[in-house]
Image 1: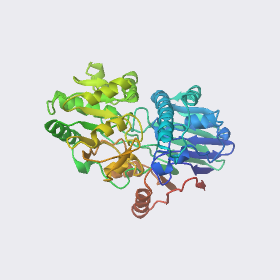
Image 2: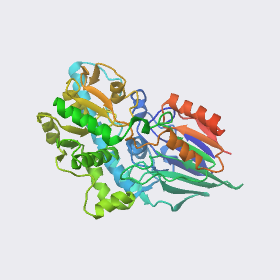
Image 3: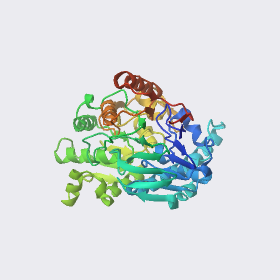
Image 4: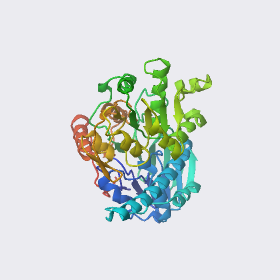
Length: 466
């Protein structure tokens, strides 16, 4: 058995792991690289032959987990892609949206660079096209939670609810080695307990090898206070100043959870009824899926839907699908709450809203999730001033704030809880999907406090498994 790491290795994005056993070559996720210093990998050849891979196991449909599937298929992959029902639907939305944005960005940058007479550091062609993204769809196959699926050569996989986003999964891969059975656990992204909308993550009881995310391996979410109190404070402050509240928003789960909290605050009259714009066609489409797949929601949310109490709708909510609707937001007088993608400000409509608001002292830019250091969002939260947006330097005058506790990722305590559920302890733990210093520190802690054999893989590093 061999396990190779082709993404999310000493970095947060680009999840992609290749598992080999006998004639089986199984890929777990194939995600987009979003950090600026690694973004060129999206155009580079894969570190393996895509045509040699027979099955891809998709943990969930975030861009950094499914975003390079169109390139993988274009470069020769013809196997099946297994995912839960919501993940199949979400992956279609995410891949088509990513391809469209890439095509638009490439055309815009070509035009701008020609006008400015300069060369780009990165290719001015999309990593893949809308046509490439559509070619993935026939390969997607729906699987159920808690049912085993035979992959051949003594390998099977079972999907378990990871509690991260709608339909997200942790995977247990069981292998008949001929000398006993071995189990590999791929955590995917582990969610928090006691969150709205989504069930709690499933805690697994056994695994020989664990590939564990470590995004928040060095911090706790609860230390910053109640989510709704934090959100209300920022909405009320902007309303008093007469400025806009711009929230760079991840379209899957984060946008829906924000709507959930805003609805509760408005109905409780804890914030004024200012207009709230969900300015993301993808987030709007994803929100509609929550009604389509109620079986994947938690019991509280299912009960609300059955009673006709929609948890994601309220007076003053406007859905902006078209570009004209998006541009019209900038003409709204007074305070507005603007939820726009993308969450790390790497593209999409939020950049246009930042252009109109980041240099206004009355405005607030509120970040509600992890910001990779090399992204525009990461630069803003770390105090860079000015920042470059759409080819121009913009002075940061708006208040820059963060809302903690809303992350879809388990924190340090949650990751320990996930690991401690395994008995006996695993033979080895691989830490991925975290900044290098965070993963290394978390690994040191696990060695000292849990006596675990921990590896923090390098990009494209391979390991033979006993």
